[in-house]
Image (cartoon, rainbow, N blue to C red; front, side, top):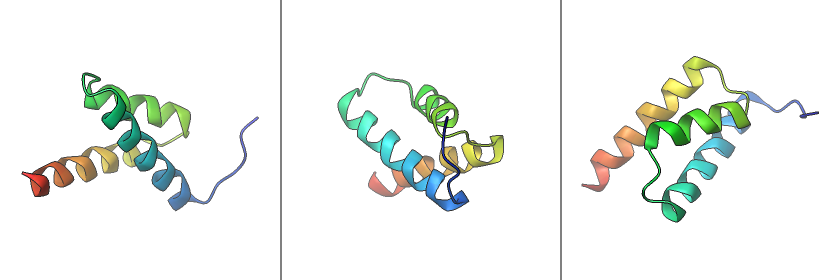
Length: 63
């Protein structure tokens, strides 16, 4: 059974998890990582969309 987490905490944990997995498994699809994080952290579709935008912007800034 999962514990109830504050809304912002779920997003922070998902970002951390996705970032770590991106470093470990570069071949892993970005969308799949977000989808898995959505299931793991019980994120809403709106929260998953936030993650897509967050990482898209991060990628633009690093280029």
